[in-house]
Structures are given as structure tokens and as C-alpha cells.
Image (cartoon, rainbow, N blue to C red; front, side, top):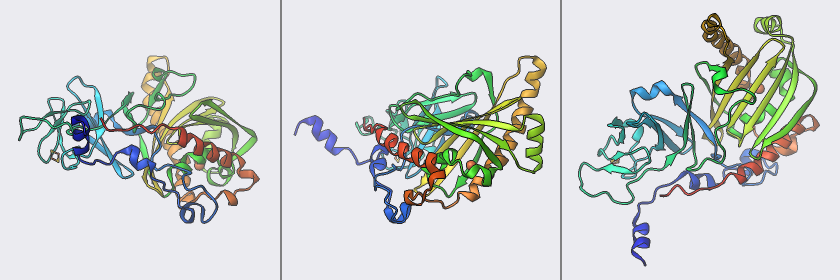
Length: 363
Ligand code: FES
Ligand SMILES: [Fe+2]
């Protein structure tokens, strides 16, 4: 055995995202109730972009998030750049999110090993030498007007997308809100393609036929016009101030990220929806609502209020999904013709999930 191979074989075994996702989670009796879903239909944690935190949370130190059976941690280095690393320390697996940032390096809470933003270990307090396995996986991240997103692959399968036809500076984001749902990750994004449910769950009646296309190899978009038919005060106000119809466009990127545009006669709202698997049957959905910035300085004063109001309307609009879609399962044999867009979406997602590259996270 060569010295390199010897060193490789002596590395401690660390379970990486690429290995976890290779596990098959779809059990016929769980997902399909014998409904014939292929056992490798959906991977546990698809490669793509996920919400991490608000930028300002990083001022207090590292921020960690649970991600299925993994954990990621973000922090700012000495150049103020955001770094995202695997959160289980290469030494004995302590959670680096419980550590602190020292001179731009992430310091493990247990024995103080210090990691740079690229995941390399810079210092071990109890040793002069640094073994080759002392390294964390590093992941791409982006900061969008005060919100941090990261990719759970060392190399992103696609760049972090944004809404069509607008630049980041055209829009102002509101504070995020979050739902913990008893719905598998792949059925959360599928909700946008579940045309049937808009009438019952959201008081939106379909006008005409939806249009589905694929603006990029790992993206699928549905656009449909709905009439706002609810009798609640929010829907009445929506009809008066925004208009009676809304054209909603939802573009799902790879499965875990959905960009939604709701275009009314008088205004357009935007929503960036991140779906993070927590277990195979539960997800955390983080939504950031964006509103168009006004040009005048008076308008600029109004924008944050507008963002807060729209955030509250959109939160109320989405809330019925939390209970209505709780516990749902995918059984292709139970779908009917009215579910055809939903069925086609899940077929597409199955192949898109498989196309998402598996990249080793070992250095
Ligand atoms: S577990 Fe992190 S330094 Fe020991
Ligand atoms: Fe919905």
C-alpha cells in the first residue's frame, strides 16, 4: 500500500452528505402504501440551495441548522465572508455550531481545534502537528439582501437562482417566516403543481389551463391564473387593492427551492421558498417574501411597511397547507386526471433528483 493510500485508510470514518443521500428512503409501505413507487424514487437530501439564516444572526457567532441526519454551520471569517462547513467536528464530532469564532476561524467547543473558512484546520491547541483528516467539508453560500443561502454540495449543481426579469436591487425582502410541516420535502414543492388544491385550501379558482415548462435542466415551472374567490377579509382587500385575478408562477429548482411570483393587476409579490428535510416525513419550509422597491424617496419609506403587510397576507395564504397537507403521501396509483400536472411534476422530480450530481465531500 502506498503511503498516500495508507494515510487515506487511516482517516477516521466521517459520514458525509453524499453518502447519506445515497441511502434510499422510499419504502413502498411508507410512501406509496404499496403504490408502486420505485424504491429509489426520491433522495433524502437533494443537491441544491437551502436557507441558512439571516445575515445578522451571524454577528452573534456561528449558526447551525439540522438537515436530515446532518448538520451545517455558517460563520463569518476575518474578511467578513460567509463560510458554511459541515458542523460535526472531524476530531470527535462535537457540534461546531456550539463553538465560537476566533480571529475569523471557527473554534470547536470541545478541544478548541480551529477551522478556516475553507474547512482546513489551522490550529490544534494540544498539538504542534495537524493530521490530514483534520478538515471540515466546505460548501458554497450566497448572501441575498440580509439572507444567507447555502448549497449542500461542495460544488453547486446550479447557481443560486433569482426571480425572472428583476434584479436583486429591484426588490426588498421581508423577515423570513417558517413552517415545520409533516410533509416529505418532495411533496412540499409539489404543492405548486397540485392545481386541484388551490380551490379548497386557498380559495383560488383556476381560470384557463396551467402552462408548464422547464426554464433550465434542473428547473420546472408552472404558471396559472386564479380568481380570488374567498370571502375572508384578506381576500376582499386583495380584490380591492390588487385585483380579482392573480397569475402565479412557481419555479422549482431541483426540488428544495421554489421561486414564486404572484402577479395581480396592480402589483406583483415574490416569494423565495426553501424546503429543508428534517426527517423523511417532515420538512422545514422557510419563506422570504420580496416586494418591488419604489423609485421615490417617499416610496422607499413605504416599502418596508408594504413588505410587512404582504408577508402577513402570504403567510395567511400558505397557512392552510400546513394542516391540509399534513401526513400526505405519494401514491401514483391514487392520482386522477385532475392531478396530471402533479403526477408529471413528480415524474420530473424523480429524474431531476437522480441527475443531481453526487460529489464526494472528502478532501
Ligand atoms: S471534538 Fe472538536 S476539537 Fe475535539
Ligand atoms: Fe398550497
